[in-house]
Length: 231
Image (cartoon, rainbow, N blue to C red):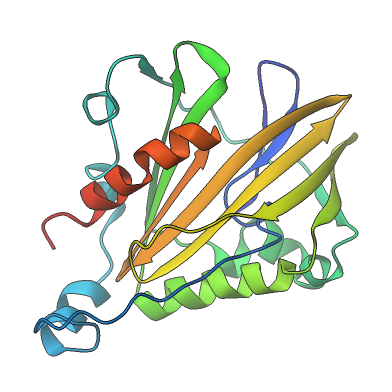
């Protein structure tokens, strides 16, 4: 749930996953299953409320064999902690720096990976997995998404760079128990970069896939299936 600031090969500074870009949200609850493991039943509560470790989450990330040919894993780079200022989105600004950059909305049990497709820096897909009690995941997501609802356009200052961000709500697939999905356009220096971001919560697991819209659509259900397998 932290704001991550990274510089792409094209020189675009982009805010990636999950907290900052999500100025509009689309959340939907699926009907409760009729089985004995429906939400709220003892079996479902026990299986889906105990958080998984970061090690367990790492084993559930997508890999090259899941994605198919043409995908190359990107090496993980040391985190950069640039100063971030949000303009024209009062609700987000009111949350304060901790909420926007890490703080109370950060889930400690997490794993992440990212890939380029066909060696193109502008064709990428990344996945993040988080685990916590279902209510904590839901409340944390709702807090940041609700704060930014109604900010279809805003600006982010990262160090000395200004990034214009526009958001457009996207249809969420009927997966999991809660869903959020949006298209984000990052504009800087006359160059636009479009990113799709989809987040699915299923029990004690939160799956976030972002990147090129077509790649997100192609692999989101696969990511959720692998993340929740064996529960």
